[in-house]
Amino acid sequence: MEDAARFIEDAVEEIYQAVGDRQALIALSGGVDSSVSAALTHRAIGDQLTPVYVDTGLMRQGETEQIRETFGHMDDLRIIDAREAFLDALTGVIDPERKRQVIGEQFIRTFESVASEIDAEVLVQGTIYPDRIESEGNIKSHHNVGGLPDVIDFETIVEPVRELYKDQVRDVARELGLSDEIAERMPFPGPGLAVRVIGEVTEEKLAVARGATAIVEDELEAYEPWQAFAAVLAKGTGVKGDNRIHGWVVAIRSVESRDGMTAQAQQLDWQTLQMIQSRITGEIDGVARVVYDVTHKPPATIEYE
Image (tube, rainbow, N blue to C red; front, side, top):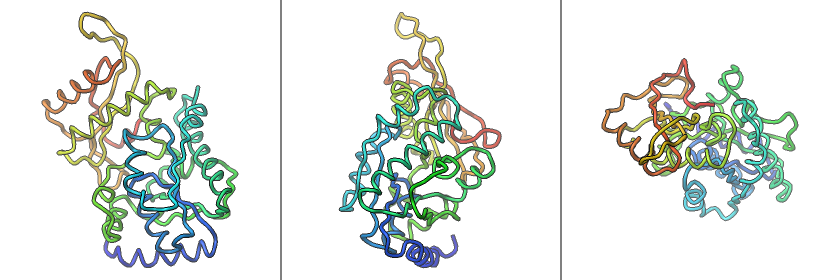
């Protein structure tokens, strides 16, 4: 963006005016959007802010450990283990929109519980402009916008980067002096791996999506994709050793984009694709086959649900 420094100055003042002398908590995920929002809010209100990371059981491999390492310097950091609550709430849920609504409500109820302990009246979120556009345009509900429940026990929700696109948020992150590890981090959906699992979310499917995504991110690092991951589609027939299996079909997705509103499927070389499929089928139990998604956005969305 043209003047990230001016944006920071204006955002800090806006946050200060919105929060006043009240306590606030921020929904921290470790991604660039929430990290920038946390940094801006901390500049504005200091120790009135409590960062809260919720381990939903839907996160990337090693995510909770990464949060501890990156944000452990924040004395008030709270890590909430809500894995059981989220997975229980998602039992039997198949419809993609319903998934997002369930996850959005579970997040809010978890934050409300923490807020009651610290007398926080303000919730800070890392919502960005594309989240609002897609939710309001009926493309898909984002867990922190259209996925929110109707009744919320917060006086105010503050969204410091609500008018920015992802590339602009990265500019602000650099201006704030955040590490490249955060500023350049690949986007990850708020509902987590739940939207990379077709149909009902189970621990088995999540384990496959988590492990396969880690392999995809590792193998495609040199391609510098906007976003790259794996999704669990369904089951299909395969062969491992001398045995026939009915295993998971995993889709690889790798796209280039500027702001996430549109995206182009990346053209990967055959050797890379073969290495990825070899690792996924060889390292992850129960995977029968791997496919590569060549669909742009539109007509597809980047994530699967």
